[in-house]
Length: 179
Image (cartoon, rainbow, N blue to C red; front, side):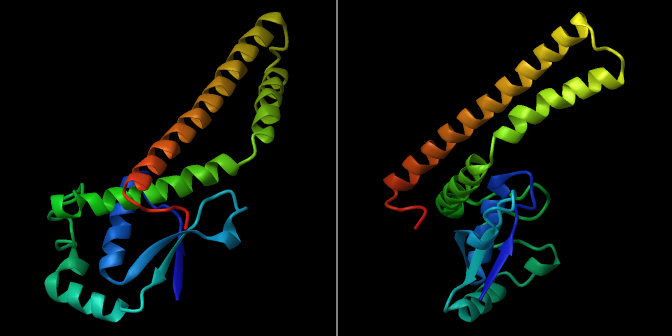
């Protein structure tokens, strides 16, 4: 049995903490959902472990207040933000690396052509609608288009570098990802 989710938080680190907690209850993060790979949004899969029932029972005994805003496995007490305890830090860090590799890989597969065509066309339409289609307006729009395209390219470079750093971390830990 498996469950699919997208990242519900603006932070991959929070999602890694969630994955760690889910593992304590018997669900392991296994990567991106291959069926939803072309959806434009990365969806992540958690699979039920064979010993899920025993893990969940053991975790519920150790953390009986967790469902009612109590302490979560491997985390400090509730008041937001949830912070990882030192004993769980290394596992959460490795989960974060696996999730980030999948996330940045999914972003890297997104097509750039719509952005490269869409941004300039959008600015031209904006100038046309507002009656600013003259030399000064075109120069300003060209500068803004160039700035946006440079920012887009820089974000792709940043994502590639972050992904490579996470791959090195997993390699040093002896984890092959994606499996």
